[in-house]
Structures are given as C-alpha cells and as structure tokens.
Length: 173
Image (cartoon, rainbow, N blue to C red; front, side):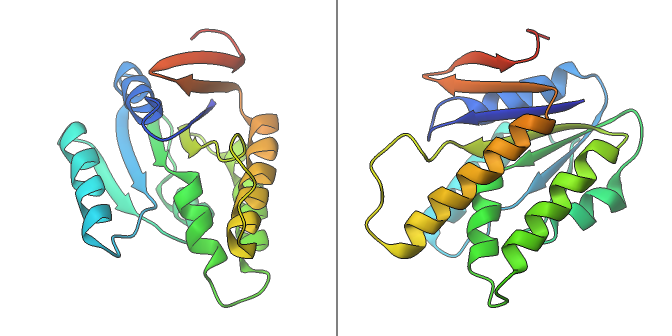
C-alpha cells in the first residue's frame, strides 16, 4: 500500500503520516531526506525527532531514495518518507544534469514493487504565486510533476489543510 500525504507548511501532514505509521501496528522505519545546513533546519529536525516514537528505525537519505528503499524493504513493515520536496531540493542541487530526473523515475518505478507499506510526505508548492527565480520555478515545476506521477501510483492520496485531511484518492482507511 502506498499512501501519499500532501499539504502546506505546518498543515498537519507529518503528524498524520506518523499516526498512520503507528496505526499500522508494524515495525516502522522513518526515512528522513532533510539535510541540516543551518541552525533553523537543525531545530526543525530536532522537533520532528522529538515527535517520533524512539523505537522507530531511522535512515537519513538525501539523494538515493529508491536504492535505499530497495535495501530496507521487507514484508510486514511500514516505511515513512518525510519529505519528498526536501529530497527534490537536494536532487536539484546536484551537479549532474539529469540526476534529478533519473532519481525521480527510479523512485516511481521502485515504489510499486516494494513489499513494505509506504507513507510518503510532501509539501504542496503549487498553490501560491509563481516564484521569480529560475531555480525556484524549476523546484515548483519538478515537485508538481513528481506529485502528479506519485498520485497516479499511490493507493491513497490525502491533502492536509489546517490539520484536517481531505481524501483525494482511495477510501478513508
């Protein structure tokens, strides 16, 4: 089962994803894509760490997400990935020109083959004004493309607003 949870900043998407992982009653591996380049990001990471159960496994993977998922995949397990937009930022900063596109296609191909239940969290970035800078526009465009493709392969898609989940695809479960 692939669950895809979208929302804006502080929309409740990570909390919902963590609740789904707890409700799965399976062992959970949390895959973090963030990199702490500054103090503010370190604080955000620490906040997320404090909210998670201590017995969950943790893997930090900023770039090679598909490869890492294949390595840790097993039945009767939930893998929670938070978040795809931070992962996209990391990919776009890579010096190899086609790196981002290759890694996204690899992830989209791998996800349906996994035995683990997957919960993916991502920021919806396409609801605001069009950014002025080229890299910011590319980020919004590429994130939007990934979200559309992820929505197609996911079994369940939820959009969070103000802490409320709105089901876009699949049933309430």
